Image 1 (cartoon, helix red, strand yellow):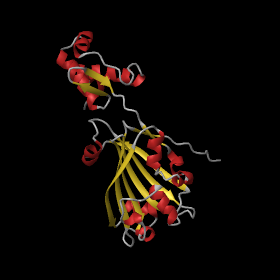
Image 2 (image 1 turned 45 degrees about the vertical axis):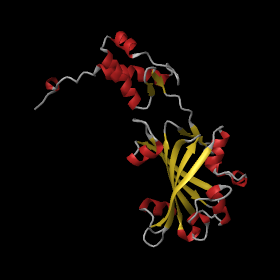
Image 3 (image 1 turned 180 degrees about the vertical axis):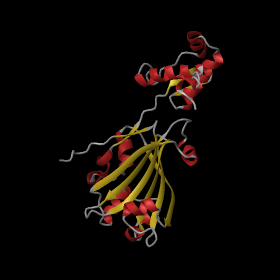
Length: 262
């Protein structure tokens, strides 16, 4: 039987990880601001009494976590990517659709950037179980239209969006087959079908990206994605659209302004 006194001592922290931890703490606390250059490998090696390759390993750890960018011959810099803000409930306002802009287009334009959306596929499928549950339909008796979009701001990939809508609602709409949805985007077309967004439910979490997302979004090593699952609910309390977004966590943030319940 092992007693506390018999337990082996904890493994010492490698110097590279110890240096990375110190630099990470300074970046997170604001000691190094976005765009700031970190000390050179030579300076770090001298400061911490280690070999230069150990200091280089510490920088590689931070680069792998998405905290710094390295430039050959110039050094390592704290990543300084302005975040695109997803503006919560305001993105579904009717007057926004009346302006002819989609929610994403309006958000990007408002933040001084240029939007672009590419619809990569439109298919009619049996809904995945979680989609059927959110839409309150049967996964065996009903089909949905699945639309996949890739979203860009200033030609930088921001997010992947996969939208599901019941075939019974969109069968005779451009939503079912066309990559061009017209002024106001998909929610203006839902308005045309008699389903206006009056309430929305969003579930937000974070995770590491899958290989397909890494490729499409050009995500650096160590950077997670924000995983957002959205449900649109109409004026009759009926869910009519589900969207699943994978957003680059280093490029996007979410801002919600919601009333507090009694």
